[in-house]
Length: 496
Ligand SMILES: Cc1cc2nc3c(=O)[nH]c(=O)nc-3n(C[C@H](O)[C@H](O)[C@H](O)COP(=O)(O)OP(=O)(O)OC[C@H]3O[C@@H](n4cnc5c(N)ncnc54)[C@H](O)[C@@H]3O)c2cc1C
Image (cartoon, rainbow, N blue to C red; front, side, top):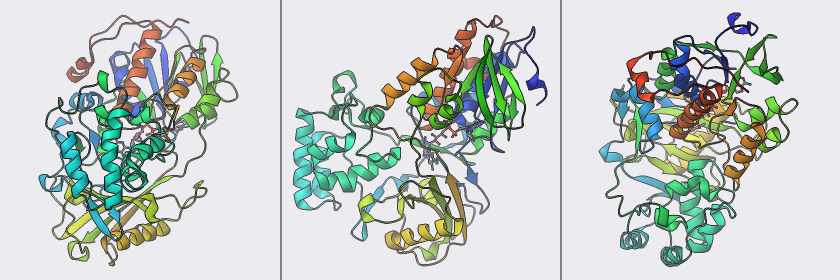
Protein backbone atom coordinates (compact mmCIF):
# COMPACT_ATOMS: atom_id res chain seq x y z
CA UNK A 1 0.00 0.00 0.00
CA UNK A 2 2.73 2.43 0.89
CA UNK A 3 4.36 2.05 -2.54
CA UNK A 4 1.17 3.28 -4.14
CA UNK A 5 1.45 6.45 -2.10
CA UNK A 6 4.77 7.55 -3.62
CA UNK A 7 4.87 10.99 -5.13
CA UNK A 8 5.31 11.33 -8.90
CA UNK A 9 8.94 11.19 -10.03
CA UNK A 10 10.88 9.91 -13.02
CA UNK A 11 8.89 6.71 -13.26
CA UNK A 12 6.44 4.64 -15.23
CA UNK A 13 3.07 6.31 -15.75
CA UNK A 14 0.64 5.43 -13.00
CA UNK A 15 -2.94 4.33 -13.50
CA UNK A 16 -5.54 4.07 -10.74
CA UNK A 17 -8.59 1.88 -11.22
CA UNK A 18 -11.41 2.67 -8.82
CA UNK A 19 -13.64 -0.39 -8.28
CA UNK A 20 -12.86 -4.10 -8.36
CA UNK A 21 -16.03 -5.39 -10.01
CA UNK A 22 -15.83 -7.13 -13.36
CA UNK A 23 -15.35 -3.81 -15.17
CA UNK A 24 -12.38 -2.74 -13.02
CA UNK A 25 -10.81 -6.20 -13.12
CA UNK A 26 -11.23 -6.39 -16.89
CA UNK A 27 -9.61 -2.97 -17.27
CA UNK A 28 -6.67 -4.14 -15.14
CA UNK A 29 -6.40 -7.30 -17.25
CA UNK A 30 -6.26 -5.24 -20.42
CA UNK A 31 -3.43 -3.16 -18.90
CA UNK A 32 -1.44 -6.22 -17.81
CA UNK A 33 0.71 -6.18 -20.94
CA UNK A 34 2.22 -2.96 -19.68
CA UNK A 35 1.93 -3.47 -15.94
CA UNK A 36 3.66 -6.88 -15.99
CA UNK A 37 6.65 -5.42 -17.74
CA UNK A 38 6.81 -2.46 -15.35
CA UNK A 39 5.99 0.06 -18.07
CA UNK A 40 2.84 1.08 -16.30
CA UNK A 41 2.15 1.10 -12.54
CA UNK A 42 -1.44 -0.01 -12.02
CA UNK A 43 -3.26 0.18 -8.69
CA UNK A 44 -6.81 -1.09 -8.29
CA UNK A 45 -8.76 0.18 -5.29
CA UNK A 46 -11.73 -1.83 -4.05
CA UNK A 47 -13.74 -0.56 -1.09
CA UNK A 48 -14.96 -3.99 0.10
CA UNK A 49 -12.95 -7.04 1.27
CA UNK A 50 -13.37 -8.87 -2.07
CA UNK A 51 -13.42 -8.31 -5.81
CA UNK A 52 -16.29 -9.17 -8.16
CA UNK A 53 -19.11 -6.91 -6.92
CA UNK A 54 -22.36 -8.86 -7.24
CA UNK A 55 -20.62 -11.81 -8.92
CA UNK A 56 -20.73 -14.04 -5.86
CA UNK A 57 -21.39 -17.77 -5.33
CA UNK A 58 -22.23 -19.45 -2.03
CA UNK A 59 -20.88 -23.02 -1.91
CA UNK A 60 -21.78 -23.66 1.74
CA UNK A 61 -24.49 -26.21 0.89
CA UNK A 62 -22.42 -27.93 -1.80
CA UNK A 63 -24.67 -26.39 -4.47
CA UNK A 64 -23.44 -23.34 -6.36
CA UNK A 65 -25.95 -20.78 -5.11
CA UNK A 66 -25.44 -17.69 -7.23
CA UNK A 67 -26.04 -14.37 -5.52
CA UNK A 68 -25.68 -12.30 -8.69
CA UNK A 69 -25.40 -13.40 -12.29
CA UNK A 70 -25.91 -17.11 -12.89
CA UNK A 71 -25.52 -16.90 -16.66
CA UNK A 72 -24.24 -14.80 -19.51
CA UNK A 73 -24.85 -14.39 -23.21
CA UNK A 74 -22.44 -16.42 -25.31
CA UNK A 75 -23.24 -14.49 -28.47
CA UNK A 76 -21.34 -11.40 -27.29
CA UNK A 77 -17.61 -12.01 -27.68
CA UNK A 78 -15.99 -10.01 -24.85
CA UNK A 79 -16.62 -12.40 -21.99
CA UNK A 80 -16.05 -15.52 -24.09
CA UNK A 81 -12.66 -14.12 -25.13
CA UNK A 82 -11.78 -13.30 -21.53
CA UNK A 83 -12.65 -16.83 -20.41
CA UNK A 84 -10.39 -18.19 -23.12
CA UNK A 85 -7.52 -15.94 -22.04
CA UNK A 86 -7.97 -16.98 -18.41
CA UNK A 87 -8.08 -20.69 -19.26
CA UNK A 88 -11.68 -20.93 -18.05
CA UNK A 89 -13.32 -22.05 -21.30
CA UNK A 90 -13.22 -25.66 -20.09
CA UNK A 91 -15.43 -24.65 -17.15
CA UNK A 92 -18.31 -23.51 -19.35
CA UNK A 93 -21.57 -25.31 -18.73
CA UNK A 94 -24.84 -25.00 -20.60
CA UNK A 95 -28.52 -25.32 -19.85
CA UNK A 96 -29.67 -28.96 -19.54
CA UNK A 97 -31.53 -30.26 -22.59
CA UNK A 98 -34.45 -31.07 -20.26
CA UNK A 99 -34.63 -27.47 -19.08
CA UNK A 100 -35.35 -25.45 -22.19
CA UNK A 101 -38.75 -24.18 -20.96
CA UNK A 102 -39.34 -21.17 -18.76
CA UNK A 103 -42.59 -20.17 -17.13
CA UNK A 104 -44.68 -17.19 -16.08
CA UNK A 105 -46.92 -17.36 -13.02
CA UNK A 106 -50.51 -16.21 -13.41
CA UNK A 107 -53.79 -17.06 -11.68
CA UNK A 108 -52.38 -19.77 -9.47
CA UNK A 109 -50.47 -21.74 -12.13
CA UNK A 110 -47.35 -21.80 -14.26
CA UNK A 111 -47.65 -21.05 -17.98
CA UNK A 112 -44.92 -21.84 -20.46
CA UNK A 113 -43.55 -18.64 -22.01
CA UNK A 114 -44.75 -18.58 -25.63
CA UNK A 115 -41.83 -18.46 -28.08
CA UNK A 116 -42.44 -15.16 -29.86
CA UNK A 117 -38.88 -13.98 -30.37
CA UNK A 118 -36.71 -15.30 -33.17
CA UNK A 119 -39.55 -17.09 -34.95
CA UNK A 120 -41.42 -16.35 -38.15
CA UNK A 121 -44.88 -14.83 -38.36
CA UNK A 122 -46.78 -18.13 -38.49
CA UNK A 123 -44.83 -19.65 -35.61
CA UNK A 124 -45.58 -16.52 -33.55
CA UNK A 125 -49.28 -16.80 -34.46
CA UNK A 126 -49.30 -20.49 -33.41
CA UNK A 127 -47.53 -19.66 -30.13
CA UNK A 128 -50.13 -16.98 -29.36
CA UNK A 129 -53.01 -19.33 -30.19
CA UNK A 130 -51.77 -22.13 -27.95
CA UNK A 131 -50.51 -20.17 -24.92
CA UNK A 132 -52.46 -20.59 -21.69
CA UNK A 133 -50.96 -17.37 -20.30
CA UNK A 134 -53.30 -14.96 -22.10
CA UNK A 135 -57.11 -15.12 -22.47
CA UNK A 136 -58.83 -15.06 -25.87
CA UNK A 137 -59.51 -11.29 -26.07
CA UNK A 138 -55.85 -10.72 -25.19
CA UNK A 139 -54.73 -13.30 -27.76
CA UNK A 140 -56.68 -11.58 -30.53
CA UNK A 141 -55.13 -8.27 -29.50
CA UNK A 142 -51.68 -9.89 -29.55
CA UNK A 143 -52.31 -11.34 -33.00
CA UNK A 144 -53.19 -7.86 -34.19
CA UNK A 145 -49.94 -6.72 -32.57
CA UNK A 146 -47.88 -9.14 -34.65
CA UNK A 147 -49.32 -7.42 -37.76
CA UNK A 148 -49.19 -3.90 -36.29
CA UNK A 149 -45.55 -4.19 -35.35
CA UNK A 150 -44.65 -4.76 -39.00
CA UNK A 151 -46.46 -1.55 -39.96
CA UNK A 152 -45.33 0.46 -36.94
CA UNK A 153 -42.02 -0.99 -35.70
CA UNK A 154 -40.80 -0.07 -32.23
CA UNK A 155 -38.91 3.21 -32.24
CA UNK A 156 -35.47 2.79 -30.74
CA UNK A 157 -34.52 6.49 -30.97
CA UNK A 158 -35.17 6.66 -27.22
CA UNK A 159 -37.96 9.23 -27.27
CA UNK A 160 -40.69 6.90 -26.00
CA UNK A 161 -40.14 4.19 -23.33
CA UNK A 162 -40.60 0.58 -24.36
CA UNK A 163 -43.73 -0.05 -22.23
CA UNK A 164 -46.15 2.32 -23.98
CA UNK A 165 -44.86 1.22 -27.39
CA UNK A 166 -45.44 -2.46 -26.60
CA UNK A 167 -48.81 -1.68 -25.01
CA UNK A 168 -50.09 0.23 -28.04
CA UNK A 169 -49.21 -2.68 -30.33
CA UNK A 170 -49.90 -5.84 -28.30
CA UNK A 171 -52.46 -4.58 -25.77
CA UNK A 172 -52.45 -4.29 -21.99
CA UNK A 173 -52.85 -7.96 -21.06
CA UNK A 174 -49.81 -9.17 -23.03
CA UNK A 175 -47.79 -6.19 -21.78
CA UNK A 176 -48.55 -6.78 -18.10
CA UNK A 177 -48.34 -10.58 -18.09
CA UNK A 178 -45.72 -11.34 -20.70
CA UNK A 179 -43.57 -8.40 -21.74
CA UNK A 180 -43.25 -6.67 -18.35
CA UNK A 181 -41.76 -9.69 -16.57
CA UNK A 182 -39.72 -10.73 -19.59
CA UNK A 183 -38.22 -7.43 -20.76
CA UNK A 184 -38.51 -5.24 -17.67
CA UNK A 185 -37.35 -8.08 -15.43
CA UNK A 186 -34.21 -8.79 -17.46
CA UNK A 187 -33.14 -5.17 -17.08
CA UNK A 188 -34.49 -4.55 -13.56
CA UNK A 189 -36.08 -1.41 -14.97
CA UNK A 190 -39.86 -0.84 -15.01
CA UNK A 191 -40.96 -1.40 -18.61
CA UNK A 192 -42.80 1.93 -18.67
CA UNK A 193 -39.47 3.70 -18.14
CA UNK A 194 -37.20 1.27 -19.98
CA UNK A 195 -35.06 2.59 -22.84
CA UNK A 196 -35.95 0.73 -26.08
CA UNK A 197 -32.42 1.39 -27.34
CA UNK A 198 -31.01 -0.49 -24.32
CA UNK A 199 -32.91 -3.67 -25.16
CA UNK A 200 -32.97 -3.33 -28.96
CA UNK A 201 -30.54 -6.21 -29.42
CA UNK A 202 -32.78 -8.67 -27.57
CA UNK A 203 -35.93 -7.64 -29.46
CA UNK A 204 -36.65 -9.46 -32.72
CA UNK A 205 -34.96 -7.47 -35.50
CA UNK A 206 -38.18 -7.14 -37.49
CA UNK A 207 -39.92 -5.51 -34.50
CA UNK A 208 -37.70 -2.44 -34.49
CA UNK A 209 -37.39 0.54 -36.76
CA UNK A 210 -33.71 -0.34 -37.16
CA UNK A 211 -34.68 -3.73 -38.66
CA UNK A 212 -33.26 -3.01 -42.10
CA UNK A 213 -29.75 -2.62 -40.72
CA UNK A 214 -29.91 -5.82 -38.68
CA UNK A 215 -30.02 -9.40 -39.93
CA UNK A 216 -33.53 -10.81 -40.03
CA UNK A 217 -34.54 -13.42 -37.46
CA UNK A 218 -34.93 -15.99 -40.21
CA UNK A 219 -31.49 -15.34 -41.60
CA UNK A 220 -30.10 -16.05 -38.16
CA UNK A 221 -31.11 -19.70 -38.62
CA UNK A 222 -32.14 -22.05 -35.83
CA UNK A 223 -31.57 -20.54 -32.41
CA UNK A 224 -29.30 -22.31 -29.99
CA UNK A 225 -29.49 -21.73 -26.24
CA UNK A 226 -27.56 -18.53 -25.95
CA UNK A 227 -26.60 -18.70 -22.24
CA UNK A 228 -23.81 -20.36 -20.33
CA UNK A 229 -22.50 -20.50 -16.77
CA UNK A 230 -19.35 -21.72 -15.01
CA UNK A 231 -19.09 -25.16 -13.41
CA UNK A 232 -17.54 -23.95 -10.12
CA UNK A 233 -19.88 -20.99 -9.88
CA UNK A 234 -19.73 -17.52 -11.38
CA UNK A 235 -17.48 -16.26 -8.58
CA UNK A 236 -14.69 -18.38 -10.08
CA UNK A 237 -14.44 -15.71 -12.80
CA UNK A 238 -13.42 -12.67 -10.70
CA UNK A 239 -11.35 -14.98 -8.48
CA UNK A 240 -9.33 -16.36 -11.40
CA UNK A 241 -9.01 -12.92 -12.94
CA UNK A 242 -7.62 -11.34 -9.77
CA UNK A 243 -5.24 -14.29 -9.29
CA UNK A 244 -3.88 -13.70 -12.79
CA UNK A 245 -3.26 -9.99 -12.26
CA UNK A 246 0.49 -10.12 -11.79
CA UNK A 247 1.29 -6.51 -12.65
CA UNK A 248 -1.61 -4.87 -10.83
CA UNK A 249 -1.54 -4.02 -7.14
CA UNK A 250 -4.99 -4.79 -5.82
CA UNK A 251 -5.87 -2.87 -2.65
CA UNK A 252 -8.89 -4.44 -0.98
CA UNK A 253 -10.80 -2.60 1.77
CA UNK A 254 -9.55 0.65 0.27
CA UNK A 255 -12.25 3.03 -0.85
CA UNK A 256 -11.59 6.17 -2.85
CA UNK A 257 -13.30 9.10 -1.17
CA UNK A 258 -12.02 12.09 -3.13
CA UNK A 259 -10.69 12.87 -6.57
CA UNK A 260 -9.13 16.09 -7.81
CA UNK A 261 -6.71 17.44 -10.42
CA UNK A 262 -3.07 17.84 -9.49
CA UNK A 263 -0.63 19.14 -12.08
CA UNK A 264 -0.89 16.93 -15.16
CA UNK A 265 -2.54 14.14 -13.21
CA UNK A 266 -4.92 13.41 -10.40
CA UNK A 267 -4.89 12.95 -6.66
CA UNK A 268 -7.15 10.32 -5.17
CA UNK A 269 -7.93 10.47 -1.49
CA UNK A 270 -8.42 7.11 0.17
CA UNK A 271 -10.57 6.14 3.15
CA UNK A 272 -7.47 5.20 5.17
CA UNK A 273 -6.51 8.90 5.35
CA UNK A 274 -3.77 8.55 2.73
CA UNK A 275 -3.77 9.62 -0.90
CA UNK A 276 -2.19 8.58 -4.17
CA UNK A 277 -1.27 10.24 -7.44
CA UNK A 278 -2.21 8.86 -10.86
CA UNK A 279 -1.57 9.99 -14.42
CA UNK A 280 -4.74 8.30 -15.56
CA UNK A 281 -7.86 7.03 -13.78
CA UNK A 282 -10.52 4.49 -14.66
CA UNK A 283 -13.69 5.02 -12.65
CA UNK A 284 -15.12 1.48 -12.71
CA UNK A 285 -17.92 2.33 -10.29
CA UNK A 286 -21.62 3.08 -10.64
CA UNK A 287 -22.76 6.40 -12.06
CA UNK A 288 -24.00 7.32 -8.60
CA UNK A 289 -20.58 6.67 -7.06
CA UNK A 290 -18.72 8.42 -9.91
CA UNK A 291 -21.00 11.44 -9.41
CA UNK A 292 -20.23 11.42 -5.69
CA UNK A 293 -16.49 11.47 -6.38
CA UNK A 294 -16.75 14.20 -9.03
CA UNK A 295 -19.41 16.43 -7.48
CA UNK A 296 -17.25 18.88 -5.56
CA UNK A 297 -14.08 18.88 -7.65
CA UNK A 298 -14.86 17.38 -11.09
CA UNK A 299 -15.40 19.15 -14.41
CA UNK A 300 -18.72 21.05 -14.66
CA UNK A 301 -21.71 18.94 -15.66
CA UNK A 302 -20.15 15.49 -15.29
CA UNK A 303 -21.56 14.71 -11.84
CA UNK A 304 -25.02 16.02 -12.74
CA UNK A 305 -25.27 13.75 -15.78
CA UNK A 306 -24.01 10.71 -13.87
CA UNK A 307 -26.09 11.07 -10.75
CA UNK A 308 -28.90 8.58 -10.32
CA UNK A 309 -31.90 8.63 -8.02
CA UNK A 310 -31.68 6.01 -5.25
CA UNK A 311 -32.87 2.57 -6.31
CA UNK A 312 -33.95 -0.28 -4.04
CA UNK A 313 -31.30 -2.95 -3.43
CA UNK A 314 -31.44 -6.22 -5.37
CA UNK A 315 -32.05 -9.03 -2.89
CA UNK A 316 -31.53 -12.65 -3.93
CA UNK A 317 -32.25 -15.62 -1.65
CA UNK A 318 -30.55 -18.95 -2.38
CA UNK A 319 -32.40 -22.00 -1.06
CA UNK A 320 -31.86 -25.76 -0.87
CA UNK A 321 -34.80 -28.13 -0.38
CA UNK A 322 -35.39 -31.85 -0.11
CA UNK A 323 -36.73 -32.94 -3.49
CA UNK A 324 -39.85 -34.44 -1.91
CA UNK A 325 -40.75 -31.06 -0.42
CA UNK A 326 -41.21 -29.53 -3.88
CA UNK A 327 -44.64 -30.45 -5.24
CA UNK A 328 -43.90 -29.60 -8.90
CA UNK A 329 -41.49 -31.22 -11.39
CA UNK A 330 -39.26 -28.13 -11.93
CA UNK A 331 -38.46 -29.10 -15.52
CA UNK A 332 -37.19 -25.87 -16.95
CA UNK A 333 -35.08 -22.88 -16.03
CA UNK A 334 -37.52 -21.17 -13.70
CA UNK A 335 -40.43 -18.78 -13.33
CA UNK A 336 -41.00 -15.08 -13.97
CA UNK A 337 -43.56 -13.45 -11.71
CA UNK A 338 -45.40 -10.42 -13.12
CA UNK A 339 -45.66 -7.29 -10.98
CA UNK A 340 -49.46 -7.52 -11.22
CA UNK A 341 -49.47 -10.66 -9.03
CA UNK A 342 -48.52 -8.49 -6.05
CA UNK A 343 -46.19 -11.26 -4.83
CA UNK A 344 -42.90 -10.43 -3.07
CA UNK A 345 -40.86 -12.46 -5.59
CA UNK A 346 -40.03 -11.26 -9.13
CA UNK A 347 -38.40 -14.44 -10.44
CA UNK A 348 -37.28 -17.90 -9.37
CA UNK A 349 -34.37 -19.73 -10.97
CA UNK A 350 -34.38 -23.54 -10.65
CA UNK A 351 -30.61 -23.72 -10.40
CA UNK A 352 -30.22 -27.48 -10.12
CA UNK A 353 -32.66 -28.21 -12.97
CA UNK A 354 -31.24 -25.46 -15.16
CA UNK A 355 -27.51 -26.06 -15.25
CA UNK A 356 -25.82 -29.13 -16.59
CA UNK A 357 -23.60 -29.88 -13.60
CA UNK A 358 -23.51 -32.78 -11.15
CA UNK A 359 -25.62 -32.17 -8.07
CA UNK A 360 -23.63 -32.46 -4.83
CA UNK A 361 -26.36 -34.31 -2.98
CA UNK A 362 -28.95 -36.73 -4.38
CA UNK A 363 -32.49 -35.97 -3.29
CA UNK A 364 -31.92 -32.24 -2.87
CA UNK A 365 -32.57 -29.31 -5.19
CA UNK A 366 -31.31 -25.74 -5.28
CA UNK A 367 -33.15 -22.65 -6.41
CA UNK A 368 -33.02 -18.93 -5.89
CA UNK A 369 -35.61 -16.20 -5.58
CA UNK A 370 -35.25 -12.58 -6.69
CA UNK A 371 -37.22 -10.44 -4.26
CA UNK A 372 -39.21 -7.39 -5.17
CA UNK A 373 -38.30 -4.25 -3.21
CA UNK A 374 -40.05 -4.05 0.14
CA UNK A 375 -40.83 -0.39 -0.36
CA UNK A 376 -40.51 2.01 -3.23
CA UNK A 377 -37.31 3.80 -2.26
CA UNK A 378 -35.81 0.70 -0.67
CA UNK A 379 -34.61 2.70 2.29
CA UNK A 380 -33.07 0.68 5.08
CA UNK A 381 -31.63 -2.82 4.85
CA UNK A 382 -33.99 -5.76 5.25
CA UNK A 383 -33.15 -8.28 8.00
CA UNK A 384 -32.06 -11.59 6.44
CA UNK A 385 -34.77 -13.58 8.21
CA UNK A 386 -37.37 -11.31 6.64
CA UNK A 387 -35.86 -11.83 3.15
CA UNK A 388 -36.01 -15.61 3.62
CA UNK A 389 -39.61 -15.37 4.81
CA UNK A 390 -40.61 -13.24 1.81
CA UNK A 391 -38.91 -15.75 -0.52
CA UNK A 392 -40.78 -18.62 1.18
CA UNK A 393 -44.08 -16.79 0.86
CA UNK A 394 -43.46 -16.43 -2.88
CA UNK A 395 -42.48 -20.10 -3.21
CA UNK A 396 -45.62 -21.14 -1.37
CA UNK A 397 -47.92 -19.21 -3.73
CA UNK A 398 -46.01 -19.96 -6.92
CA UNK A 399 -44.82 -23.54 -6.44
CA UNK A 400 -46.87 -24.76 -3.48
CA UNK A 401 -43.79 -25.25 -1.27
CA UNK A 402 -44.73 -25.38 2.40
CA UNK A 403 -41.64 -27.00 3.92
CA UNK A 404 -38.70 -25.08 5.30
CA UNK A 405 -35.49 -25.08 3.25
CA UNK A 406 -32.58 -27.19 4.51
CA UNK A 407 -30.23 -24.29 3.70
CA UNK A 408 -30.65 -20.63 2.82
CA UNK A 409 -28.42 -17.67 2.08
CA UNK A 410 -29.29 -14.03 1.45
CA UNK A 411 -27.42 -11.69 -0.89
CA UNK A 412 -28.34 -8.00 -0.80
CA UNK A 413 -26.75 -5.80 -3.46
CA UNK A 414 -27.08 -2.07 -2.97
CA UNK A 415 -27.14 -0.09 -6.20
CA UNK A 416 -25.91 -3.08 -8.17
CA UNK A 417 -28.07 -2.66 -11.26
CA UNK A 418 -28.70 0.80 -12.69
CA UNK A 419 -31.96 1.53 -14.45
CA UNK A 420 -31.62 2.00 -18.19
CA UNK A 421 -34.32 4.59 -18.63
CA UNK A 422 -35.24 6.43 -21.81
CA UNK A 423 -32.38 8.73 -22.81
CA UNK A 424 -29.75 6.60 -21.04
CA UNK A 425 -27.26 6.46 -23.92
CA UNK A 426 -27.51 10.21 -24.55
CA UNK A 427 -26.98 10.95 -20.86
CA UNK A 428 -23.87 8.76 -20.73
CA UNK A 429 -22.55 10.45 -23.89
CA UNK A 430 -23.08 13.89 -22.27
CA UNK A 431 -21.33 12.71 -19.10
CA UNK A 432 -18.35 11.45 -21.09
CA UNK A 433 -18.22 14.75 -23.02
CA UNK A 434 -18.23 16.73 -19.77
CA UNK A 435 -15.60 14.44 -18.27
CA UNK A 436 -13.34 14.81 -21.31
CA UNK A 437 -12.28 18.16 -19.84
CA UNK A 438 -10.20 15.94 -17.57
CA UNK A 439 -7.82 14.02 -19.83
CA UNK A 440 -7.08 10.35 -19.16
CA UNK A 441 -10.15 9.80 -16.97
CA UNK A 442 -12.43 7.01 -18.18
CA UNK A 443 -15.76 5.57 -17.07
CA UNK A 444 -16.35 1.83 -17.17
CA UNK A 445 -19.00 -0.54 -15.92
CA UNK A 446 -22.66 -1.39 -15.92
CA UNK A 447 -23.92 2.17 -15.49
CA UNK A 448 -22.69 3.12 -18.93
CA UNK A 449 -22.34 0.52 -21.68
CA UNK A 450 -24.81 -2.27 -20.80
CA UNK A 451 -25.59 -4.26 -17.65
CA UNK A 452 -24.79 -7.81 -18.81
CA UNK A 453 -21.41 -9.29 -17.92
CA UNK A 454 -20.16 -9.40 -21.54
CA UNK A 455 -20.91 -5.66 -21.90
CA UNK A 456 -19.29 -4.90 -18.55
CA UNK A 457 -16.11 -6.79 -19.50
CA UNK A 458 -16.09 -5.01 -22.87
CA UNK A 459 -16.61 -1.65 -21.15
CA UNK A 460 -13.65 -2.19 -18.80
CA UNK A 461 -11.33 -3.31 -21.56
CA UNK A 462 -12.38 -0.49 -23.88
CA UNK A 463 -11.76 2.09 -21.13
CA UNK A 464 -8.26 0.65 -20.62
CA UNK A 465 -7.54 0.83 -24.35
CA UNK A 466 -8.72 4.45 -24.52
CA UNK A 467 -6.49 5.25 -21.58
CA UNK A 468 -3.48 3.56 -23.17
CA UNK A 469 -4.11 5.53 -26.36
CA UNK A 470 -4.30 8.75 -24.36
CA UNK A 471 -1.09 7.88 -22.54
CA UNK A 472 0.52 7.69 -25.93
CA UNK A 473 1.35 4.12 -26.77
CA UNK A 474 0.14 1.61 -29.31
CA UNK A 475 -2.04 -1.28 -28.27
CA UNK A 476 -0.83 -4.85 -28.81
CA UNK A 477 -3.17 -7.62 -29.92
CA UNK A 478 -5.46 -8.89 -27.17
CA UNK A 479 -4.74 -12.53 -27.94
CA UNK A 480 -1.23 -12.07 -26.54
CA UNK A 481 -2.66 -12.28 -23.01
CA UNK A 482 -3.19 -15.96 -23.57
CA UNK A 483 0.57 -16.38 -24.01
CA UNK A 484 1.34 -14.72 -20.68
CA UNK A 485 3.25 -11.47 -20.26
CA UNK A 486 3.90 -9.95 -23.63
CA UNK A 487 7.08 -8.45 -25.05
CA UNK A 488 7.66 -4.82 -24.22
CA UNK A 489 5.77 -2.28 -26.30
CA UNK A 490 6.91 1.33 -26.65
CA UNK A 491 6.92 2.95 -23.25
CA UNK A 492 3.79 5.00 -22.67
CA UNK A 493 4.39 8.68 -22.11
CA UNK A 494 1.90 10.84 -20.29
CA UNK A 495 0.68 13.78 -22.32
CA UNK A 496 -2.04 16.25 -21.78
C1 LIG B 1 -28.84 -10.03 -8.62
C2 LIG B 1 -28.11 -9.79 -9.91
C3 LIG B 1 -28.26 -10.70 -10.96
C4 LIG B 1 -27.57 -10.49 -12.15
N1 LIG B 1 -27.70 -11.41 -13.15
C5 LIG B 1 -26.98 -11.27 -14.27
C6 LIG B 1 -26.96 -12.31 -15.24
O1 LIG B 1 -27.59 -13.36 -15.07
N2 LIG B 1 -26.20 -12.15 -16.35
C7 LIG B 1 -25.44 -11.04 -16.54
O2 LIG B 1 -24.75 -10.95 -17.57
N3 LIG B 1 -25.42 -10.02 -15.63
C8 LIG B 1 -26.16 -10.12 -14.51
N4 LIG B 1 -26.12 -9.15 -13.55
C9 LIG B 1 -25.39 -7.90 -13.85
C10 LIG B 1 -23.89 -7.98 -13.63
O3 LIG B 1 -23.59 -8.86 -12.58
C11 LIG B 1 -23.36 -6.59 -13.27
O4 LIG B 1 -23.79 -5.67 -14.24
C12 LIG B 1 -21.84 -6.54 -13.20
O5 LIG B 1 -21.34 -7.53 -12.33
C13 LIG B 1 -21.40 -5.14 -12.75
O6 LIG B 1 -20.00 -5.03 -12.78
P1 LIG B 1 -19.32 -3.59 -12.57
O7 LIG B 1 -17.86 -3.81 -12.48
O8 LIG B 1 -19.82 -2.64 -13.59
O9 LIG B 1 -19.91 -3.07 -11.20
P2 LIG B 1 -19.69 -3.66 -9.75
O10 LIG B 1 -19.50 -5.12 -9.81
O11 LIG B 1 -20.78 -3.11 -8.91
O12 LIG B 1 -18.28 -3.05 -9.32
C14 LIG B 1 -18.08 -1.82 -8.71
C15 LIG B 1 -17.09 -2.05 -7.59
O13 LIG B 1 -16.64 -0.79 -7.12
C16 LIG B 1 -16.55 -0.85 -5.72
N5 LIG B 1 -16.61 0.54 -5.26
C17 LIG B 1 -17.69 1.35 -5.26
N6 LIG B 1 -17.33 2.57 -4.84
C18 LIG B 1 -16.00 2.53 -4.60
C19 LIG B 1 -15.05 3.49 -4.15
N7 LIG B 1 -15.41 4.76 -3.87
N8 LIG B 1 -13.76 3.11 -4.00
C20 LIG B 1 -13.37 1.84 -4.29
N9 LIG B 1 -14.23 0.89 -4.69
C21 LIG B 1 -15.53 1.24 -4.87
C22 LIG B 1 -17.70 -1.72 -5.30
O14 LIG B 1 -17.50 -2.26 -4.01
C23 LIG B 1 -17.71 -2.77 -6.41
O15 LIG B 1 -16.92 -3.89 -6.07
C24 LIG B 1 -26.76 -9.34 -12.33
C25 LIG B 1 -26.61 -8.43 -11.27
C26 LIG B 1 -27.26 -8.66 -10.07
C27 LIG B 1 -27.07 -7.71 -8.93
